[in-house]
Amino acid sequence: MKNLIKLLSLLFVAGFIITSCEGPAGPAGENGKDGADGIDANATCTTCHNNDAVIETKQAQWNNSLHATGENAAYCDRDGCLQCHTSQGFLEAVATGSTTGLTIPSDPMQINCYTCHQIHTTFTTDDWTLTKPGAETLILKYAGASVVYDNGNSNQCVACHQAREVSPAPVLDGPDFAITNTRMGVHHGPQSTFLLGKIPFELPGTAYPTTNAHFGDNGCITCHMATPYGYMAGGHQFGMTYSQHGGPEMLNTTGCLTCHDAVPDYETLQATVVAKLAELQAQLTDAGIFDPSTDLAFKGTFNANAVLAYLNFDAVTQDKSLGVHNPGYINALLDNSITAMNDLGYPPPTK
Image 1: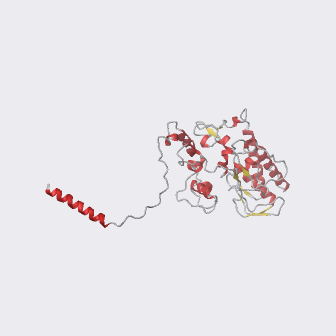
Image 2: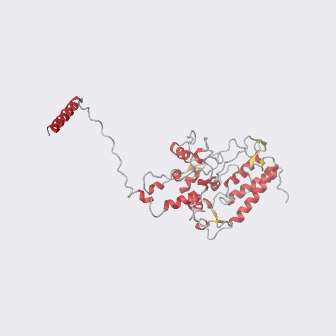
Image 3: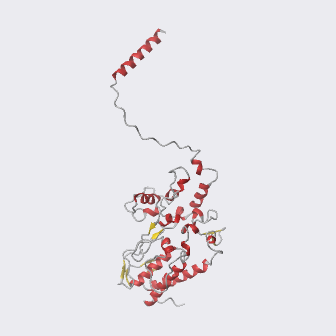
């Protein structure tokens, strides 16, 4: 007992000495900012992560899309590509308002949920808010003027799905033009430019329509995100066609029937456009502009109107809808390009 009392006494004295060696307390610091209230997972996360399987369904559709399975992110390491071909580049471009000087990601990601939606920002359904919802001023000018695309949630798509600038470009009836890059053209995604009917390489002839029924409400989304067919078309898969058990491709008609009383004869439309593209390709090949072995242009100096016809051919090919995105406009564009090549002495092939 005596030893215990001695030990406690020593501890008290040691504590007193250590305390007495401390200097006086400093002045009180400024109050910190109030922290945010804690997040209750049961009240917020389960808004999305629950048994209704909404996220799982969207992800399954997305995983079967070209955005998810394409190789677009793997080779992107420079300005002009990063903002559309990698998720990191897109979000950095949105944040900075610039598509130049973007960081080259060490692990480039395909376009994904976080690219288009503000995931895990509020931990509520507001996280579905789009990352770039506003109107989009297109890169490629029409008749020297800027073109604005503003059509609901499809604005998000148009941030990337638009024609790129061709500079320098030939002038109608202008001097001969030198093609110095075999990849000269509007690049791979000019869909919104065709929806608006604003390709700046128009040649005279058949009148170009000024309206397009397929522009519609929400543009791209009406058809490409229509009620899905499983994971194979529509919804977050974005495709328009699907195949059952390896059979022929079938159209996902749910988008068409939001406007049409019956499914339109799109096959005849596309067959007509395919035939016109083949005719124009033969003329451009005969003129020495198009190389059918590479599907690219030849370098060289050519008549300006012939180069305009080539740019129209390339743009319609890159659009990939074979006329559907704007039937009247695309047909007029091809008709006038074929006529221009005829006028230059390049008739259609003998049948």
